[in-house]
Image 1 (cartoon, rainbow, N blue to C red):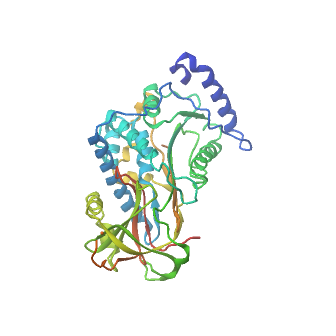
Image 2: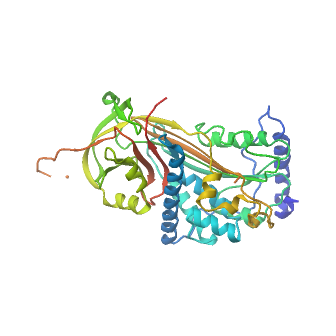
Image 3: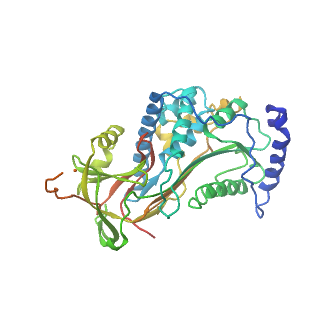
Length: 438
């Protein structure tokens, strides 16, 4: 039995959790999960990981490459529609999954996810970045007038009675703060999905609901690895609502929309590039910023297709402070639950989804495979700041006259990134093609 793999002094509390969740999963009309009950090893999260700076740089560089690969794949499916997702959430959820991958499955996943560090170095590096992100925003404000929030949380949900290796659970506990919660997928998979969805909803301040659609889990489900990320930050310099007015926005299809266009003139990091302009709008606390890449009229597809990690790094490092006359639309967008199985399969990790997958690092047997990866995201941008959330489940100047301000009128489609300035981590990414606040 699963419980036999843990220290004797923990058995009683684990057994109580098992009973609670076993009974709850078959009762959809009750409060079916108590988030305080977790089943995990006695390992505590390492709160001060000793990670070389080079490992952090390698991890972030790889995550950025994966972010752009995923963006291009999603855009190919979206046509002219909006795209928004959290590459960091997807990478993190799959990193937890990768902890149990072995042999060719491990290699394919590493190549697809651009994991260049080995298992012993990648997970501590993720822990370092996670903890750095969670330290951001001390004393800063949120979009809603409350405090700044950047919360990254992880959880794993396992089949009651199924044996997972203690070494696997130790890696997740020490580096991701994730404890195993027991559910009975065999008895009622859709009710179990409701449990996980409620956890996600709670940790994203109710912005991500119904992450896992009915029918996604089944009676053969053995493990669901989940990441949730929530971001709420005020601009360093808020837009004055009185300067927001209706203006034209030119869509990719050639239509003209009347949108709510915000306006301000401020000193910001700015770049006039080849075929585009770029602007970094800082959030309160100056630790994160929204980087906007605005292609010149008629060059959106060209610039979008040219986005690479080197280009993003080059833009960031080449920006200079300038007075900018900024016009930016308000927008709000919630994605559907996106099933990433086909995309990740085609990106280079088909073995992980096959019956020949090797996740023996999870249970000691070649017995598991990924059935799907589900992702959902939300963003709201207004005069005060930005609120964004996402979740992923893996089922797995001087004295001279000042120059005229640079003009940055986002009245046409643009690509945007929400980035941590110090590490360069891309937390969220998307494009605006037809802004809406509905």
